[in-house]
Amino acid sequence: MKGFGSDKEAILDLITSRSNAQRQEIRSAYKSLYGKDLIEDLKYELTGKFERLIVSLMRLPAYHDAKEIKDAIKGGGTDEKCLIEILASRTNEQIHSLVAAYKDAYGREIEEDIIGDTSGHFKKMLVVLLQGTRDDDNVVHTDLVEEDAQLLYAAGEEQWGTDEAIFIMVLGNRSVTHLQLVFDEYQKIAEKSIEDSIKSELSGDFERLMLAVVQCIRSRPMFFAKHLYKSMKGLGTADNTLIRIMISRSEIDMLDIRECFRLRYEKSLYTMIQVPSSMLKPCIAGEFFPEAAQIAYKMWEISAMTKVQLRGTIVPYADFDPASDAQDLRKAMKGFGTDEDTIINIIARRSNAQRQDIRQAFKSLLGRDLMADLKSELSKNLCRLIMGLMMTPAEFDAKMMKKAMEGAGTDEHALIEILVTRSNEEIQAMCTAYLKGEMTASLEDAIRSDTSGHFCRILVSLAQVNSDEMIDNFMSVLCARSFPHLRRVLQEFVKCTNKDIEQIIKKELSGDVKNVFYAIGKHLFSQCTKDLTKGLGTDDRALIRIMVSRSEIDLFNIRKEFKETHDASLHEFIQGDTSGDYRKTLLMLCGGED
Image (cartoon, rainbow, N blue to C red; front, side, top):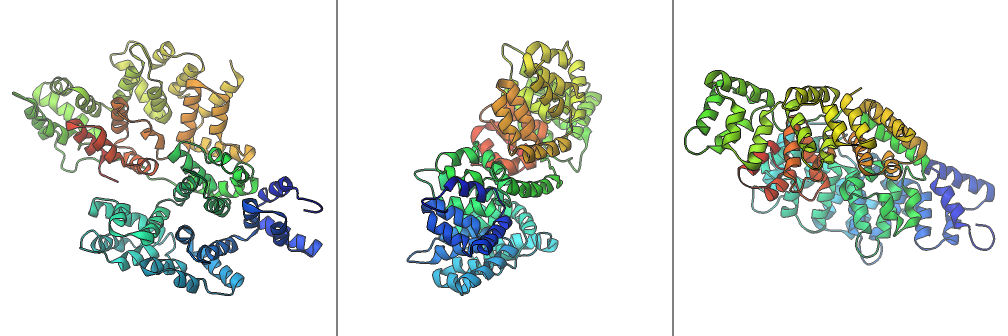
């Protein structure tokens, strides 16, 4: 900053490659060495959005939040969006630091200033959030979960008018974990999401604030990903929002926000920022911000090691009687016409193991092949779906592999989806089923005859469960190591290179080879198998394959991820894109609406 003009590149590179704690040490050293305030000098030398970005980076997080709140309520109008974003997303500790920083910087109580600038239920909820008294995340009042859900329902959907005080009390004080359980319970009671109820029962800034609170309870990274996207889409860029989020989250959860952004909008945050605001690129942890990347990855690693409970939507039927089910199925197919409702109600409500018992009872009691009878009575997509449900998982996977390779073309996406997402045991069972079925060659031989090049080698490697040097290196690691091992490897990869493995795969590989390695990488970072819902559309074969194969494993988790990354729930998608008994069966497998 000395002399005529200033070296903006040097300022940018230095400040964005240091953590906030290191910047405070720089600020102190600057004062000790030169007797000057670094922030004041930066304000003098820089202008516009660049000045706002650099000066904001130099402030402590709490003082940055305090400055944003002060700017939001000063002058003629109020920036309600800023108040909502900050107060809905901060932890108790961050709120307490913010309140103290505001008092120190401006000599005023933040609560008094916000009360003077807002009104109604919006004001009341902001004041509740300012107390920073939400229960700790590990606090769950098990006996109150259902009661809280019922309270929220009674305060809104169940009555004429809305009791806003109940919404404020519950959403403003219960812990994140507790509220996540309450939201699930609310869905069962109201048969709609808490978000949909808030949209129909509340209005204005209060509605927007309560929706923000709910979104942050569900997933803070997804909340910020949505706000970042809104700040950049359309004409112009909401630079204040963009700068505020990038700075406030760069050392907390920016890597998770990036992942949510890519999943929801199918483009990288880095690419989207590159065009409108290239000066912000260095703020993205993991690109040019190694200190922040290390901190963020440490937090990500902890969350990645947390066991995600995978849940299916189909569970064993309680009062199961295979003989009775076999008799009822025979009755449904006997005589003129077919009773599809009975067939659907039995098969779609039994676990796969129970369906195999029904097959055996049908053969023993009636001397008939249930699969053959179903095939002759049903047609089109309903037939394919019911037949898929009646097969063992290994038989179904083997059938899907054969279908993907028969005929003139090859369904590479189906091959990739199945081989990438199945465990060693599932692949071994599938290979055995493939040989025992109507197929004349082993699965490995079939893959070799229907694919070629590196793509063939990768698929065979995955199917075996056991050249080009780069491809060999990718195969030796990605196709052989366990998922927990690979998750750690890819985290170390980002720490070493400040790049995502997906970026390298996209850049260095092409075609089906790129697709299969990309699918492996994506699967590793998604224990809930997010990408199984990608590209369903009206591709009924893919829809049937996923609904049948995941219904007892993780379809409940897939439903949740589908709602997060699409504009509709999986239930709504099936409702709108399918019809008749086929739709009815799919909705039973779906298990409910999110």
